[in-house]
Length: 428
Image (cartoon, rainbow, N blue to C red):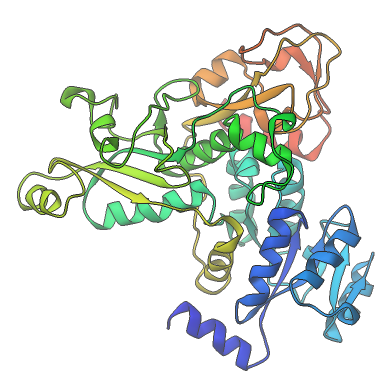
């Protein structure tokens, strides 16, 4: 049965997938609106540190104000859901405690929040879907392992570049092509970008820090780290290469070095800076000798020996409900880390930092994230970028240098830091 048919059947039978979502900002609010337009699904619980923002997001999605109730306890929330009402709350773990909820979803960019939602979901026997590669890049291995032990599903949704790459990855495998380079296409980066540089009324990125995190490469670093660890692809170097390319040149750029490209081996992860391709994802592949090469040449997707499959847009929260439904109904994992990690997202100073300086958030003023080959990150004791927000500098670091763990203090008792220590112990 097609996914749409299954969802329509749930809608007709009055038993939609009931989701507990966290985050009512630009992404979370957009997800709530999209879910309300999708048959057979509903946001039963929407959590946000500001419950009024959650209420407004549900109302903007089309839920009547009379049907929305603020709840602080599982008992009150369960009673509200039993009478057909929707729940808003400040507690990101509340939904995971409710029997009526099918899955929990985090729609933020916070690794700490994503880890809290995921762990609550695992403890409550709920499937976990993240629109949050920042969490996956930081503690995805331990979350996947914990979820498997609990018999629930853990996945990152499609919509972000990492999730969208996985659809192309599956297509490449089905076509019998050899992946040479996987990556995202972004507009030219501005590594020093801060919220002050971002237009506050940009309709595509209405939150200045989100826009800055895209411009300075932080979002890219988390997404490519997540994609690398899900596929086994390896970064060629710290920060990746990021050449300029377009659809006419991307294949030539990412051929193997022996054939004139920059790829050092089959299975690398990188990105291109491109105004014409920006916003998409790609995989450059090598075709087996014979008929496949002539066919691809005639289809104008490469030079015969190499071809590039390209998806022009990642629809973020707009397409995420598809992954959520596939997880709940088909037990499908869109993206999760496998095996030994190949990459890490590490913190790099955005300006000269001095002892006492506090590291702010993604897209802020103090640091940005870059992709580092995993073993190099371990050898350097690099600070995972997901742990950086809120850390305090205890040693000076020059602009452009990787921040090392011993150069900061952070809350080692936090859930996120605890999970990262457990994950790190896997590789000792």
